[in-house]
Image 1 (cartoon, rainbow, N blue to C red):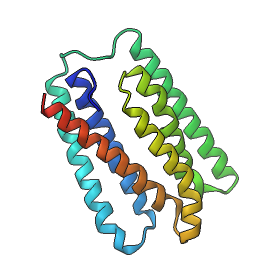
Image 2 (image 1 turned 180 degrees about the vertical axis):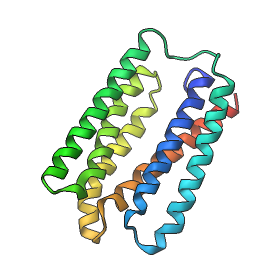
Image 3 (image 1 turned 45 degrees about the vertical axis):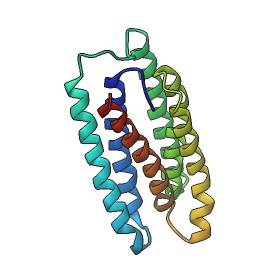
Image 4 (image 1 turned 90 degrees about the vertical axis):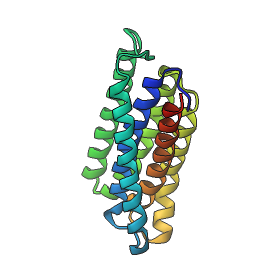
Length: 177
């Protein structure tokens, strides 16, 4: 990961840790029984990483960051487009009675939005995270169908694991500076 600033590494750990917990939680919508304990453990670990990143972020809030007068608005626009695309697509899927695809759609939007986020935040390694989540979103639909699982039970662990690994690496990076 290695963002230039410790504060940004801590922020990445906090945000990705939180969303890893959310994805691993969403995966519990209908997974095989044998997965539940691993999903729960991943959710707990994710929130611990998020808390660690959040505390470190708070402690270093006044330190340097990539966010400035130009970066902040660009980041906001990217996130705004992400939220709009996720909401509109989810609404259309629900309207078409394809709610089973909403988790994959949202993961796809998250993955795609991380490509410009990587550029704005100047963290090239986030491109790998973006690619892995985008691939997971696309692969989850046929994989879930082939295995007779809910799409969320497939895309959730894949996306959550990528985010947790990234969050943990970011936290370790921030703690070892």
